[in-house]
Length: 185
Image (cartoon, rainbow, N blue to C red):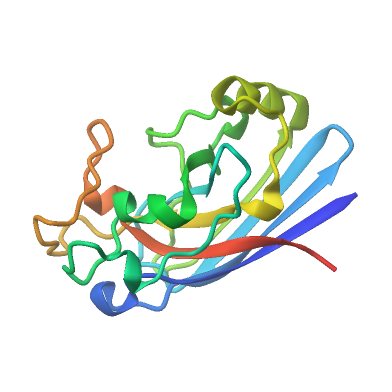
């Protein structure tokens, strides 16, 4: 069994007025990948898109800093993360192995801003879809970054905050927390 862990820390915390944090673990066990994410202090009662991001060429992905706020609006939005974190790769939704990113099958926080995601994913199916999308079936988890996205629809965002993914706006895609995935010791 191979285990990985990501300590998820806040992004955009001063703008969304919460210190979202949590932990994600990944265990490769034979034919499955077990994914467990537990988050605290998220804005309450909303759905959270969560994924790992990375570079298809295997370059190390990193958590963004304010240096990535290229338009200087005080927010690190989804497009601004690409330079250091790469692209969205695998969703932590109802069916991760389908790699269907934009939809409404993600976890929802309770009234206390807590949620837990726990899923066993068929590894061969995920690797096949990953190879189809990125040219390699090697997930290279230790080169990826976990992201949690989403803020309440009534949060005032400047028009400079980008995020339009199909019919989803920046309220859905704004990163609120991230953590680099590391090999667990």
